[in-house]
Structures are given as structure tokens and as C-alpha cells.
Image (cartoon, rainbow, N blue to C red; front, side, top):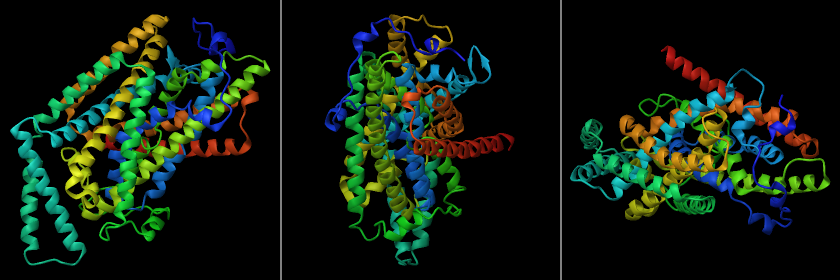
Length: 520
């Protein structure tokens, strides 16, 4: 194992001059939050808006318990990574490189992260495609886009009407003919090529994002991400509350009890092959996923928690600063967890109540238009304006934040592989170049694949497989790299072990599921 001096990341500036006493009051601490909200912005777009609502559409209320566990179980590992970062002032990739195991230039965990990084780029392509769909619905650029929107609207509205008639027992002799006509339209929609408007809008957004990130700084990213996440989260929570005034769509007490009963959903013919499979794939990206666990320490470093603490030493001043900034980090992580859990539950309930109740399941080409239906019972004719603006907010915040985050991760990785000079100037240049290139690469991948849902869930599977690896790393940090003066209590250790055990279960399932698909 490397010695303590080697474990610390060297920096050219005078660290002693950067020392800062931690805030004492809650009000002062709240002013120093930020990294967690950046991570929340990355989470809400793909995990909550797409994956979580799809789980609700397929499984109804029965997997609410799994969604809650998925949000809450990972924060303990997140904070353990943060503890390591404050102690050693070191990035997460370099921390993973110190974990015992096979090496070839770098640790095996870093090599698997490279796989996750590639699939995350694919996931961002899926997000970019969903943004393109959102803007095409709001403002088609061609006649093809306008015609496609009208056909899509007709199919979804007719399906909802038929589902509600059936639920009320209002089946009429003409219902079969209506269903046949709707199925014929749906087949035309399935056979139709996705309008080029989607790719045009995706290209425009990719270029604009590259330009913004080229000139962006931490404060811009934090403010932008926080505003976009909070705005649509509030709208979604209000929608769930107002849904209770609609008897056909209201979430009942027995629905919540069913969702908390730890039961597994039954397979519904014609709706889904395996809702649990979708849920476990979503588990990797709802709440804070494997990618965000690795990203979080980078924003902690950029915010300054580790720099304010200073290099580790045996002085009482250092431990006082470290404990104080750890309290701020914990508040930051828990505040973000509450935010994205509220958002996740709201999205899940909307998916279960409206999409599940109407028999709608978000698919690739009609993803955004189907998701918009969740807001129709409350907002009616205002749905397009309300949902499309909100969907753009959370989807784009994810795309924006992940692009900025991976510019930092990839820069760090290039240095670890010996492909980048170890200077501040080289790192700053690399971050700018990758910030420009990442959105463009995501667009290229989407242009070839054009399957947003599949691209998002594939990344979720890869992250689910990585979760037990990160759990193992967190335990190593806790028991081998934790300063004894910062050691948490026994209750924390129990919760950390439970978190890692949950990671192991999901990781094994994801791995076995992937192997079965490969063999088949």
C-alpha cells in the first residue's frame, strides 16, 4: 500500500493559505452546500424522469419499496467517499486506484470505470435524443415533424380514452372497432421513421452545450443545475398533490400500502416481460448511481471542502477543520438525498397512477409524448407547456452536469494513464477540450443508435454491476484509509455494511442477467 504522503494529491499552490474554518451554525452551513445539488441534477433526468416512471408504468405501485431503498441506501457510501476525499484531498479515481487488486498500469476498478464511462456516454446520447424529442414536440422544424406529432397525439389520446372506458365498465359495441383503428394507427406510428427534427434539435443542443461548458465555471454549473432541478421537482410534487382531486387517477392509501409491502409484481401479458428487470436496471441510476458516486468527490474538491481542511497532519487544528467540513459534506449529501428522493417518489407515483392506469409504457420513439401524459389529468390543455418546459429542464440539467463532470474525470484518468502532463495548465486545457467534445460525441452515438430508453437502461445495468465494487472500495476506505479521529460510530458502520450488501445483491443480479442475455 502506498504511504500517506503518496496517497495525497500534490498541488502547486500553498495549501496552508487556503485553510478556512468550517461554518458553525446551520444557516452558515447551508451557504456552503452545492456538490450534492449538482449530483441531484445529474440524477433526476435519466433515473427519475425516464427509468423511474417506466418502472411505475410496468409494475404499478408494487415496487415503491425498491425505489425508496434505491434512493436511500447509497448515501452512506457517498459520504464515505467524501470522508476519504476530505482526509486525503484526492480524487475518486485515484482513490480507487489504491484499492487492493489486480493492476495493469492502473487498478482493475479504474479499468471497469472505463467501461462504465463508455456506456455513460451512450446514456447521454439517449438523454440528448429525449431532449430532441421534447423540442420537436414543442417546436417541430419540418412538416414531417408536425405530422408525426399529430399521429402520436392521436394514438396516445385514443389509448387513454379506451383504457378509461374499460376501467369504468363502459365497453360499447363500437369499442372493438375503435381499438382496431387505434392499433392500426399505432402500427403506422411504429413503422414511421422518427422525424429528422429530433436529430436536428439534438445537434443544436449538443453544440450549444459545448459552447457553454467551454466558458463555464463551478458557480455557473452549480446555480444552473440547482435551479433546473428544483423548478421541475416542485412542479412534479404539485402535480401529484393535485392528482388527488381527480377520482380516476388519485393515489389511494391502499396503493401506498401495496407499494410498501415488499411484494414483487406479476408479469402482465402485453405490458411488460419483466417489470422487476426494469426496476433493477433502474436501481443502478435512481438515487445516486455508481457514476455519481465517483463524480461526487470531484465536485467536493472543486467546492473546496478538502482544500479548506488542508493537508492531513496530527494537529488538533486539522482534526477540528476536518470534522467541521465533514459535517458540511454530510448535510450536503443528505439534503441532496431528500431532494432526489422526493422527486423520484413523485415521478414513480405519476408513472404508476397515470401511465400504469392507462396502460401506457414509455418506449423509444414515443418516450417524451407518453411521459407527458402523466401531467394531462391535472393540467389538461396546459400539459404541453408545463411538461415540455419541465422535461427539458431536468433532461438538459442531466446532460449539462454529466458533460461537465466527465470532463474532469476523463482529465484525471488521462493523467493516471500517463497521457497528460501533471500541471494545472494541462488539466485546465484538457477539461475545456473534453467539455467541448463530450456533447458532440454523445450526439454522434445517438445519431447512430436512436434508442433513448435502451441507451439509458444499458448504462443503468453497467452501473448496477459496479455498485458492489464501489461498496468494497468504501469498506476499504473506512477500515484501512480512515483517520482514526474521523471514524464514525457503530450505527454508521452497520448502515454502511447494509448499503454494501444491497449493492452486492443488485450487482450479482445485473451481472447474471447480462450473462444470460449474452448466452441467449
